[in-house]
Image (cartoon, rainbow, N blue to C red; front, side, top):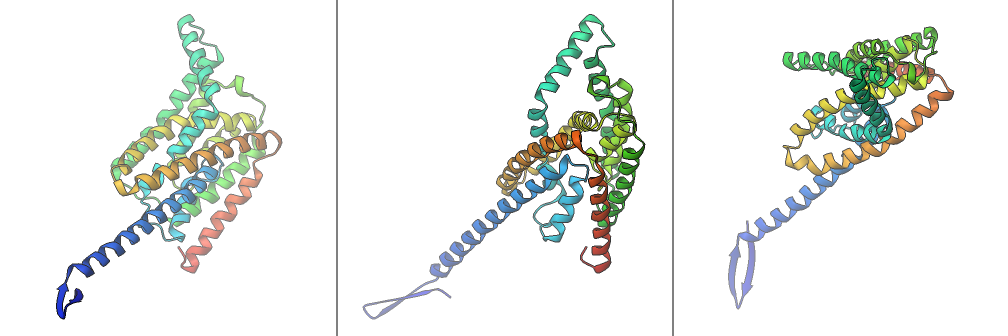
Amino acid sequence: MGTMFVTDGVEFFLPIGNHLMQTAGNAVADESNVLGKIVQGFILGIVQGITEFLPISSTAHLIIFRDVLGWKATWSKTAVDGIQLGSVFAVLIYFWKDIRNILGGAWLAFQQQEWQRSEWKMFVGIVIGTFPALLGGLVLKSLDVELESPLMIAGMSIVMAILLGLAEKFGSRKRGFEEVEIKDGMIVGLGQMIALLPGASRSGSTLTTALFIGLQRDTAARFSFLLGLPTLAIATAVQTKDVLQESHMFLPLLIGIVSTFVFSYLSIAWLLKFLQRRSSWVFVWYRLGFGAAILGAISAGVL
C-alpha cells in the first residue's frame, strides 16, 4: 500500500508515503520507550538509594521490585547493579573527612612506625576485611552460579533478621570508633561474605557482625559503610563497565545513578542519626515481614 495523489486527472501512486508514516510511528514509540526506561531508572535509583545502607538488602528489593513491575526484560542484573555507582559516590562524599583522616593517619603511622595508631588499625582492618568478599565474589562468578531466586531472597531475609536480633540482644555495644582494632576488620570482612547471597544485605551482614563483636550501634554502621566501600566500588565498576556498552541504556543508567546518589546520601545521614538514639529492632521486624511477604507471593504465584 502507498499514498495516492490525483493531479489534473492523473493518478500518482507513491509507496514511500506509508513508509514515512511507519518510520514516524516507530520514532515516537522509540522516544516513548526511552522515556519509560528513564522513569524506571529514576524509580530503581530511589529503591537502591534507600535500601543500600539500611540493613534490609538493596539487591533483594531491586530484584523483587523489578520483577513485580515487569521490568526484567529491560533491566538486567548487570544494569540493576550498575546504578549502585551512585551509592559509591554517596559514601565517598559523606565520609570524605573520615577517609582522608584514615589514609593520612595511616601514612603517618607507616612513616613513623606507630603501629598502635588508631588510623593505622582502621586502615589495615579495612584492607584485610575487603579480601574475603572479593575472593568469594570471584569464586561465584567463575562458577556462574545463579542464586537470585525469590525463595533465596526470602530465606536470607528471615535468617539475617534473626541474626540481627541476636546481635542486638547479646552485643555489648561498648566500643566506639577510635577503639576499632585490626581484628575487627578481619571479622567484619568475613561477615561481609554473607552478603554474596541475595537477600542478606552488605550493610546488614557487616552491621550485624560489628554489633556481635561489641561495637556501638552508630560506630558499627559507620565502620560497616567504610569497610564495605572498596568491595562495593570494585563490584560496581565492573558491572557499570559492562552495561555502558549497551548504548540504549546509557541515559536511563545515568538517571538511575544520580537518583541513587541523592537517596543514598539521605539514607546514610538518617541511619547514623537513628542508631545514635534507637536500636535496630525495627529492621529485624521489617526483614521478617519482607521475607514472609515474598513467601506469600511465591505461594500465590505472583513471584
